[in-house]
Image (tube, rainbow, N blue to C red):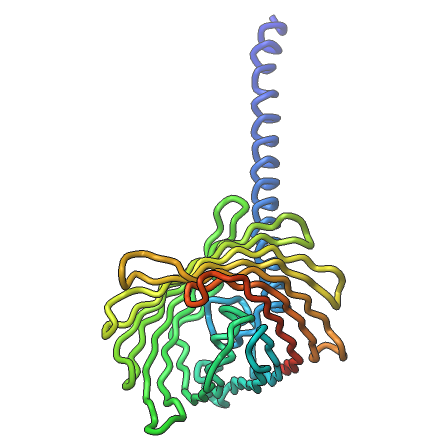
Length: 306
């Protein structure tokens, strides 16, 4: 009589084991996903903090550095057949006291923003601006703020700008989408949309795909930019990148008339805040009948933060 009871009890044992294995599998999957998300975020963020030097553009995880920031850079650019181009740039972000870190004062040179889009491009007549930034929302995946300020020009050029950024993860890809709406008294209403996709090839290598479209209501066409980059960390103090870009617009249909490819080497030369960078490259522009034009850029940069 005992045998049937034992046989009836036996099927319950595997079910207990199955539930335990299921719980372990779920925990392992959650931990694996958490590691992957942190790995993607840390890798792409580390590459950005070393290469991408725009401190006030929320399309970049550089913004994750909290507190006040300051950057001063001196760079020179040489294009075959043209005179040497020398520029000085500065950017400052001050977190105002007693505002719960939600109100910042921004002082920046416009050429610093433009140069990151294409480090080999010549920036003519750089201008400076001052603005107050109010952080509307800032979480792990969302960031929204509004700026109000003025460009230092003759006459002065007041502006207002609202920006939203969203981070997302798809399998091994890390995506950042940024939407910006602005109004400048000199150019009117404008809009910018950018998408950045990062794919870690290893713990030292990162593949980046990016696209950006800018629109001015007064011009009534889009300016387009597509980019591809492969970044590699050589050591704790040095890194390299191979980058390529295509630029165009939709004024007469979607056309691209400017292409560039280059190499960037960046090295920490003094403590943790002084960097040197060299970026040789080639350009092909429709204005020059797509003739190959060698260019080279040198930059010395100081980055200071709390």
